[in-house]
Image (tube, rainbow, N blue to C red; front, side):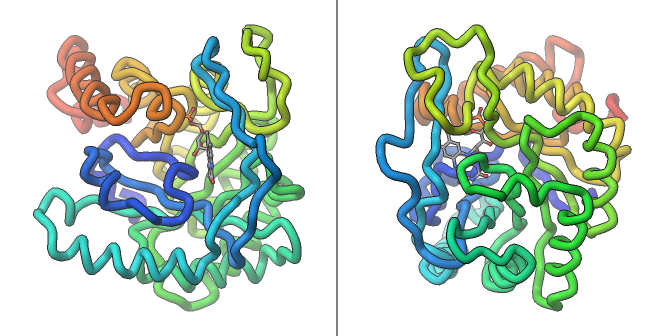
Length: 309
Ligand SMILES: Cc1cc2nc3c(=O)[nH]c(=O)nc-3n(C[C@H](O)[C@H](O)[C@H](O)COP(=O)(O)O)c2cc1C
């Protein structure tokens, strides 16, 4: 489908294993896919601490990490080592795809050169590449989501003539709904295989109760769920099955996954729920999703997916 293989419905979203330190441990936890990164061309410290806030009353997180990370050289070396390790493991672990999520440095960024450079470094090592244009904590990054710039970035990557796995573009939930159609067309024309809908939001729902609610940064977790579902419902009819759609934002139960799949998502990703519920989350989500599927009369995720086409 769309040049991207989606054998499992649940992925770990980017930002948890920013430096590709523990993809094997995460694969063992039962995630269908693991997305490492965001990785930038050069190492950088990220924003000063505190930069991460638990909004426990709201089952949410605000982060302004700012792409703290080891840079592409160390990241690529770790992925290389992971691949060797993975080749020697059992069939289940060998089958877990690894995504590499790419971003730009805060200082000295040249997106039209940086993204092709990063893609050339991880292209042979990753099962898919995510072009992150949507984190709110790198000045100017989200401006790259304009249709014209997105097309230019994707074309610069595909023209670089390097080994490339499928390319996925990660979008912000704060985009003007009227811009979505042009963005989808740019992604298709630029040769993308999928969209991740979505990253964290800079909006602050009135329902937030935590004293951290007005901290600067991207909000994730439960309060993002409705916004994320709404954006998914706007994007799916525009995509018309030309791109894989990966839904991300506020997913914390099997019912949430079922709802996203029914709304037209091909896959889902989670992050904040893992922070609140720990590794047992993965098994619970799978069991709950199965229950929801059976309750609705479907035998499998693909059975449900074929009913939404
Ligand atoms: C602490 C933290 C760090 C994150 N870092 C990244 C990142 O480096 N790159 C990225 O694309 N998304 C990053 N994200 C966003 C998540 O991948 C995800 O899109 C977002 O949190 C919404 O999903 P959730 O509500 O399940 O957490 C981060 C999220 C959190 C909470």
